[in-house]
Image (cartoon, rainbow, N blue to C red; front, side):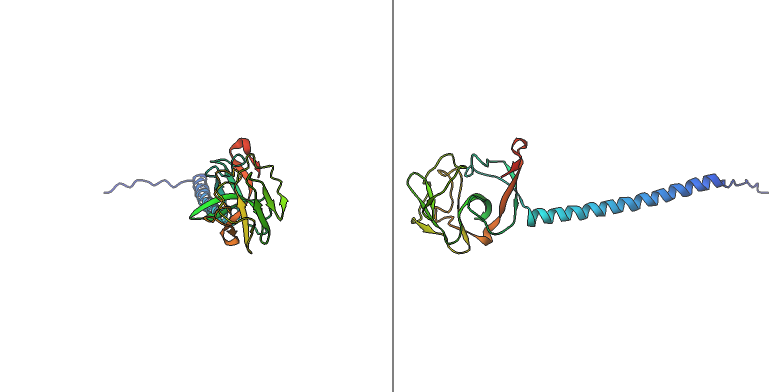
Length: 193
């Protein structure tokens, strides 16, 4: 004869506790899944905004010194209708260069031997330039800016390769990444450009 062992059934409190734990696990999984999906969506949106509307760039080279130095991280904004004095980033020879807009389409640019810049026969006020120089200029002056292009120059005139040289020339609207609006690094220099 086989001996039967009485089975104990869990009481109501134990069943309710197990049911509560199972409900908690399901809620936790649902919240976790929702959070992950939200983070992925936000990250994708941030990448699109950073790529298309507000590209973040790191300055390389010395052509914009002392205003922008190598290693600075800046935010640019895609726009149109650039004005004299705007600092823009543009594509050139598989690189992104940063220069300052000097003249817009149709304007005449002239530069004397001392590096003074004239736009439409008026001396350009350039408080951002610490040392003027004619630089690497091989264009015939005075020079008229072609349609749909802007004439750009670096702030460090003696070393900047820019629109004064036919290697770069005037920048077309299609080449422009955007106008630099804000410096985010280094911490001590954070602020608008």
